[in-house]
Length: 238
Image (cartoon, rainbow, N blue to C red; front, side):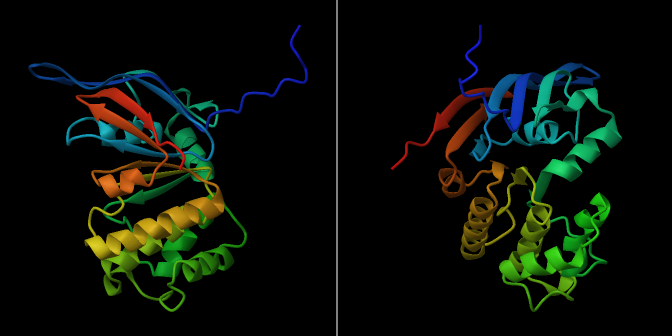
């Protein structure tokens, strides 16, 4: 008989099991990912590192449900993504996931405020302007609400992207080379802001990076090589 007083295991925010991705080419099959598996607990900060072509970005795409695996399973908050159709995966992303990209991915025809309001509008929230204004103030852009992306510096655009990612209060944030298009000084400021926002929101963070300094800020490092997970290292507490 089970002990009713025993603590219940916490559902992982992210569970990856025997994940594989293969592409058929004219001269045969190309293996991009092979037998990748790990779980991510709520509140963890995880860096996925490895050389170009090691499978990092493909792995992130599969974890976010932007692509489907050839084999294996991704579960996001207990939901198996590959069991859903494209609309279903988009709905889960809208409810649970935030994104920050290297190229910012802001809509050029929308102001900073409108870009941050957009995910709230897509989710069907009643109040979209209030939360968007508040988080843009928090990232230091309260005076730039009406500016379009072309009127903002790279660092300011990435701050808008951070605001957009966190405004929905996601349980999981994916970041793909978030400082890749920024100079060292600006990148450091964005890193500091990313971890400040993440800690304040209690969000689980999974990021892909070539930047060792950024990876060192995470509590855990997953190393990819030739499509396989070859190391899973946790930083020792100070």
